[in-house]
Image (cartoon, rainbow, N blue to C red; front, top):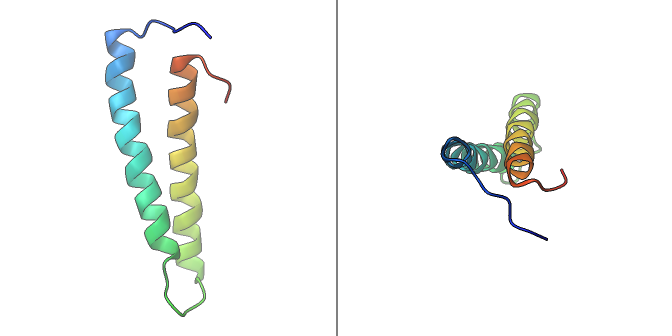
Length: 69
């Protein structure tokens, strides 16, 4: 696999996407850490939304690097 050259703009976007990915992943994990209780509707909705946000960020990172999503 040959390395793809990343522009300065893409590099800046990757930094933002990486932060978004980690922040969304953390929020998703926090939403489902309910201890002994079942996950409730609001926490489940939050988990799904944040998980989707993290997935979008990772897909874009892969696109920039030219990797299969």
